[in-house]
Length: 359
Picture (cartoon, rainbow, N blue to C red):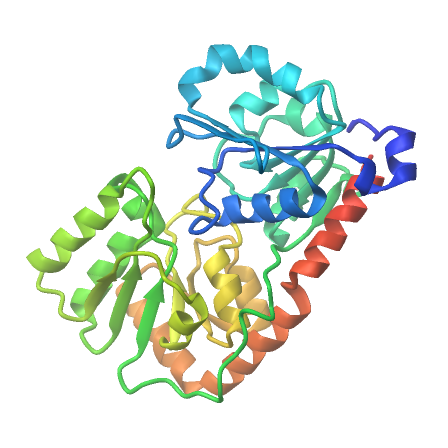
């Protein structure tokens, strides 16, 4: 069973709770979703962030109370984490189902776990120690319930964004040549298949009437995926594919320049369960094209704010055609659902309740 929060913490409220945020994110909140969500929570609740990620070496930010480590520090981290844990009242792990290092070392304070990715193996013993388990899809909630996790310890909390920043544009219709944006670009060439970049490049070769724009990200450690994608575009003469590089000053404006944003994951582990680009693009009133393999495809289908496609070129083309024919309704649904579900104020309130009442 999950450990109960001390009575004093539940009585005094979250402002008195010292929260340690443990994550496997790369600590790049400007371009990476989990990093951004953790930063939003830690900033609001005055918490401390401790990350372990292979793209970090050693990161220390005293002003924002951020510590980041490479996994090669593992022997020292196993000694240091229990000491760091004691400096907080509550652990919030924001990562995969059972992040390897944290499930072995966090044992001295109550644990709130947010599952932001389906990657990795489930460790029942770790889940049993969690006071509350937060998920971002109905599918993961059902999966954990089937594994025996009590309903009282499960919460569905969607990521929140600033809806004042991501506003819909004027009434819109799709262009004669549909414009599709990929904004969940991988860091490494080895991730191109599961993220769906390879699938989109293959589809682009067979669908010259659709324009694809792939937004790479300026990772601190560089990007082999961008280099490989650029090579493929040239080698295959993909005139309908553009690789956008560099930081984007205004993501809203970028979404509004496209007819769709695409989430083409080829496996459930292909990326974040609820991709941030999906949330932001819906808030801008732009429908989503999402593969049937992506965990959030059920949401898109049920809320009718985009189109779900099987992982075939024909299936993708059919989804685009269907979405174009139903475009105004999909745009309206995207705005309505985002306003109802993805407000960052609602997310922060939900986590405040979790911190105060988890047991």
